[in-house]
Amino acid sequence: MHEAIRSNVSLTARNTLGVSSTAEHYYALEKSADLPELLAIATDKCWPVTVLGGGSNVVLGERISGLVIQQASLGISEIERDESSVVLAVAAGENWHQLVEHCLEAGLYGLENLALIPGTVGAAPIQNIGAYGVEVGEFITSVQYRNLDSGQQHVFKRDDCKFGYRDSVFKHRLRDKCMIEVVCLRLSLKFRPRTEYPSLQAFMQQQTLDSPSAKQVFEAVVAIRSSRLPDPTHIPNCGSFFKNPQLGHDDLQLLLQNHPDMPYYDDASTGGYKLAAAWLIEQCGFKQCSAGKVQVHPQHALVVVNPEQASGAEIRKFAGQIVSSVEARFGIALEQEPRNYG
Ligand code: FAD
Ligand code: NAP
Figure 1 (cartoon, rainbow, N blue to C red):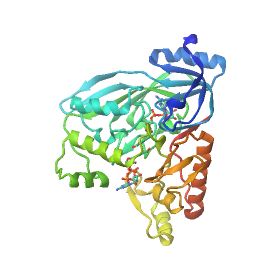
Figure 2: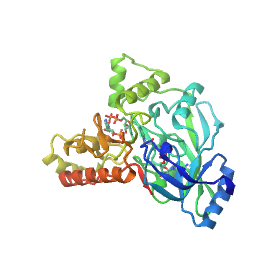
Figure 3: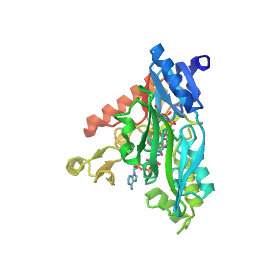
């Protein structure tokens, strides 16, 4: 095991922002059973542990000290079936989009709106990945993880995960404290389209698809995303850089007095409202704006792109300028979605 831990390993091709970064020590975890021994070595050597999945929601610094463990465990198995649904247990290193395709081919429904989200299955519960009106937490029945400090395995039921808008217990009480090993999802044997999200609905109307099949919804999501979002393999990025701010009725009314054109949406998760972070950023003049090698994507103000391999520090500095401008103009503190490491 010790010999399989490599030193000074480049993470540049292992993060979708394409930031140049090196792990002091690195291990690709293919077998969950290896984790306890790996953690014991890290404790013995006083190495801090950083968990990495597909690297699509991180901003890495030049050097990550200690041990980077990248989830690479594979396996999908059916663990429960009744007349209307199936529960799959999926290893954390499986690719998320490939899981969505697998389910579609197997006649297991629910995940179509979440097609083409990069990254691993193990990272999906961390921020309760969501798109086009659907969140993964709706399907998760349990999450199995190992505590990085104690080495103990635990199983969290859905309620324990405390899923919210791009949020879960894994970003709070269990932040930096766990390695998710298996995610269990309940999928339906009967397809019910979820096409009420505005851009998806518009696409369906345009294609005159009144009662689309699961494959048609999946293909629609892939088509919309491909036309709107920069592909990180061509233009390095980590998706939305900021969360949409959430606020209550009174704060919204105050803001609308000064900014009557400001878009806002009902926030079903809190009963309050969500603002469009992209609009706030655009209003501050950041769309099509660049600072050195970092840019806001010209078609999508929420996406920071890194076409010229800026460093993590440069990206964080640019993001800080966006946060300061939005705060000065609107009094709103934008929250960064990807995690900073190193
Ligand atoms: P990483 O970036 O490797 O890690 C992210 C965080 O999760 C880190 O803190 C890491 O330590 C932790 N982590 C990862 N795996 C584990 C594990 N097994 N156990 C414990 N902790 C772990 N997100 C959405 O919600 N909706 C979208 O529509 C969406 N679209 C995107 C589009 C693009 C083009 C890109 C680049 C990103 C998009 N994202 C979206 C963000 C990202 O894809 C998701 O957050 C994804 O779940 C991250 O997975 P990952 O494996 O790459 O995680
Ligand atoms: P969009 O439809 O133009 O949406 C832009 C933003 O406005 C999204 O953040 C979305 O919130 C919000 N929004 C729009 N209509 C809404 C409504 N009716 N109710 C509530 N919120 C509404 O699409 P987009 O930017 O191309 O993204 C499409 C979907 O993919 C969105 O769900 C988005 O979250 C997701 N996505 C996420 C990431 C990421 O990295 N997190 C990256 C790309 C795309 P929601 O985010 O709550 O949907």
